[in-house]
Length: 177
Image: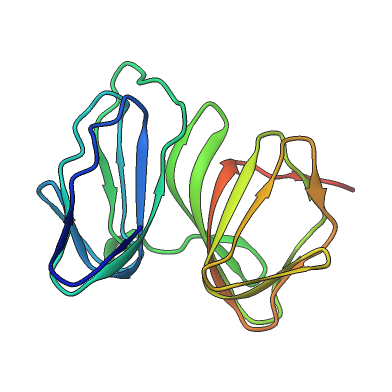
C-alpha cells in the first residue's frame, strides 16, 4: 500500500486479522504512529482506524482469514525497541506475532549468511525489505514478494549483500538433515 504525502486511507474495518509493516516512511494508523520497520496487528473484527501519512509511506498490509481468539488485542512492535535476538550464524530474528506454530517475523542477515535446507509446514510469505536473497535459483530484491506453499522447502537460502526480510509462516523452520 503506497500513501502519497498528505494522503489518508480509510479502508473498511475488516472482519479479518490485519498486519501492517512500515517498509518506507512513517504513518499513523488510528492512534498509533509507526516508523520504518514498525509492525502493528489488529485482531479480526476490531477497528484498525484510518491510515495517514504526512510525508508519504509504503506499507505491507496482510489480511489473512484468521478468526479472533480469546484475549486477542492490538499489538505494536517498534523497530527501535525490539532488538534482534540471534537465530543462526550471521542471522538474527525478531518474532513480531505468533499463534499455533505460525508467526510474523523479521530476519536480519549479514552478508554471506545462509540458512540450512528446510521445509515449510505452513505457507510462507516473504517480503524483501532491504537487500538481496537467493531462494534456490530465485533472486529476491527489495520490494519482491515470494510465496512458498506448505509442504515445499528451500535448498538454498543465502545472501551476498545482507538482508532484512519479513516472513509469515512457521515459527520454527523444519531443517532437513
